[in-house]
Structures are given as structure tokens and as C-alpha cells.
Length: 617
Image (cartoon, helix red, strand yellow):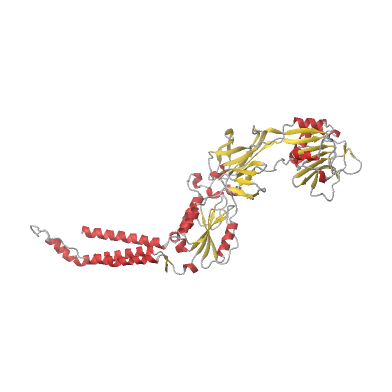
């Protein structure tokens, strides 16, 4: 046995003082009374109890000495002998994933699973000094070392007070593997205690002798969640935007409620829903008004499930989306005259169109535009191409040879971004320019989404931040301008060349996903956090990305994780629930000095009862 505060033994000098107080004789006060007749019986009974009374006084003395000894031992803070060499080493792995924010009893409880796990962690931290050293890790996408091995309960409790669950998912496997590495070189009894819920627990390879224990919190519950929420302006109509929202019922019973959608402070729509168990439903808003401002200032869309009938996880009842006010594309047409393209570009409100003749054009002008359209002209080599370019029956891939007369369209890639909603089935071409893909492409990657047998009719190319599209035919030498496919094809092509095609630069990500930031880019989170180099959003909300000199853009982070929202997953086998832990296991986490103080208090109550019994007799 070792003592952390041996100076407490100096208080044993109070033992003689207690003994002297009991040996002191009480001076009786003399008083004259008229008769002793009424006192004879009482004096006789007192003589019979004199010996027993002295025994009671000695028993009281022993109780007081024992109380003093227990208090002195508590002040010395005793520890079991050899704890520093052979004591217990424990790594607490606290699950901080989003599902730990779930509330039991259908969301009626005020305490989450994480609150219950944190209470158990505090009890373990209180017994760290007498029960062994303790380290604390968090599991999930926000995995980190909260505290290294320590025997200071105050320090451990301070670290636990700063813990909070994240809004992300993740896997507990990396945290368990790190816990095993921390325990690999520790002597004595070693264990990993995982505080989580009923979700399946991975089985990592742990060092020999390391025990893996688990306490589960919460019970499977019903939950209704927003699983998808995305918005983008329509490419052909900047005045409107498409909005898609999906709601899922992960419960075992029917769920009813309503969905509220707001744009900034303005309520856009409220729609009721009723979902059967396991059902999910998608809602499409095809005519959502886009921001009135044509600048770069984005607007925030917010979706919320109002009053769901059954919901255990409030976190996934709301989602954010960013609806940017997309500026118009700056397009330059270099042509001697192309009536179809001039009218089409001038009629598109999503474009800012300018026209130049080939004689007035200089290659350096291409840097001021998002896309340059070369009509039967333009650079003849790949090295001379500046910016993003669309070549019409011209370009650096033109090959020598005769033109293809009335080429048939034999192969059209339906997944090509240029061909979204474009039907090539009845399009006829008069002639086409022969194209040849070079072997050495100088960093360019080329594809042929439209072919006539082995002859490419449309070629797309990418090189770093530049893009290129080559039409081997002139639209005036085809019936394409007479078809609906013509404006769709040109709009899709210009959007793709300007890196604004559908799915590029998403304005929404899943919490916990890693996003590499551009050099000089800084991300500011909704909780005030700052990230550089890489962003891992652990909180739902809107993140601001500042990229000088381009400016500022917003990024919405939402849960959208079925593994976290589905709280009725099959429980893992042999799960030990926190509520069924034996009393001795909880008592073992208490420091020894606390039990000594409790014992002294119990003896003090016993002495108090004996004293009042003597007085009443």
C-alpha cells in the first residue's frame, strides 16, 4: 500500500486528545433537596447499570478512535501496492457519431445516448488514480486522442467536459486499432472499453492479452430522416431552378408529418407526407425561383421535417442546400457570319454574347471569356489553343483528305454530358470534316461521343483546367437547327466547356467527407472553426470557402447517411447494456478514500444513536 499524501498521518496526534477527553472525570454539582425518597429507586437502578455504562463509554471511545483513523487514512489517499507497475490500463473509446445523439422513447427523453455514455466515462475517470491509468479516444469520423494515459481524475474530467458528439458517421475500427497500439507496450491488466450503441462493432486485430469490452446505450427506435436535398439553377433558364428532396422512414410503424422549405427567410412550400415502414419518397420542385440577384451572392435553402409522428434523431430532420445566383457565361463567337449561332446565342439569357471577325480576333482575347466559339477558323495546333474552345468544322485535329459525304450517325454516347436530352435519331448531316486523334496529345485526353462508324463527328478534350469540343460538321449543312436538339446540344456544350455541367463543383457534401482545399483557400465552419489544406465537415450547416482572388462561395454539409439514420439496425451479438452493469463493477470505479469517508460517516451515525440512547435512559 502506498500513500499519496503521507503528511495526513500527522493527524494521528489527535488520538491522545480523544482518549484524555474520555478519562476526564465530570465534576458533579451539589444541590440541596428536601428529600431523597423519590430518587432512591433511580439511584438503585443506576448502580446496577454502572458496569454496563462504563462499557458503553469504552465502546464510544473505540468508535471515535476508529472514525478518526478512517478520516486520517482518507486524507493520506492510499493506493494499492505496485499500482505503477502492474495496475490496470484502460482505453475508453467513446462513440461520437451522429447516431449517438438519438433520444430513446421515440424522442421523448431529454438525454441522448451520448449523455449516458459520458456519464459512464466520468465514473471511470473518477477511479483512474486508484483503479489504474486511463486514456480516452473518440470514434468515428472525428476520431482523436482526447487524453493520453493519465491517473489524474480532475484532468480526465476536464477533457470529458469538452466532448460533444459530431454530426458525421464513420467507423469505429480505426479508433479500436489505435487503442490496441496504445496498450501494446503497457504492463499489467489491459482492456479497451467501448461506449457505443447497438450498431455492429468491428473486430480489429488486437495485441495479445488486450480485452475488448463494450457497453451499449439506447434501444432501437423509429426515425424519419431527410436523405437527399439538392438544388441547382436550370441551365437553359436562370430564372428557375430544380430542387430534389427525399424523405425516408426507418421505423417499424407509419410516419406522418410535413416538410417545410424556405429560401432565406421566405417560406416556399409546405407539403404533407405519410410513409409506410421502410418507405422513402422523393419530391421534385421543378419551378423553384432562383435568386433575383444576378451576382455571385448565393442563397440558402432550408428543408425541415415539421412534427414527425415518430422520430428519435432530430439531427436528420433538417438539411441545407445552396442555390447560387449563377452569373451568365461570357461567350465570344469568332465568325465571318453564322446566322443560326448568332440568333441562338443572342436569345439565351444565360449567356453574355459578343461577336468578332477572324481578322479582329487575337489569341490573348480568349482569356477574358468563358468559352470561345471558332466558326471555320481558329488555332491549328493544340499548343496555340487558349482557354475553353468550341470549333465548328475546324480545329487543330483536322486531317487531310476528302470530306465525308452524308455521314450516318452510328454511335452516340447517351451518358456524354453534351448529349443530355439530345436525340440524334433523325438528324441528317450533309458532309463532315475528317478528324484525326494524334498519338502524342500534349496532355490532352480526347473522347469521341459521336461517330460515323470509325470516323469521329464530335470530339471532346480535357487538359488540366482547359476543355475543347470539335464539331466535324457545320450546323448550317444539316437539319439540326430545325430540331429541338440544337439549342439543347449547344447549351450543354457551353455549360460543359465552362465547367458548369450538372454534377460539377457540388454545393453540398456529406458530413465527415474529406475535401481538399485549393492553395490559399480557407474554410470557415458554422461553429467558428477554421480549416486550411483540407476540410472534414463534422457539423451540419453552411461552410464558407474563401479563395482569393476568386471570392467566396458556400458549401452545405448534411448527414445523408443511412447507417446513422437507421436506428433499427440488427443489434450485435453479446452486447452488454450499460443499464445492466453489476453494482460491484460500478463501485470499483470509486477511489478508496471515498469509501473510507463513507465508512467514517456511517460510524459517526452509529455513535450519534448510542449517545442519544444513553441520554434518554
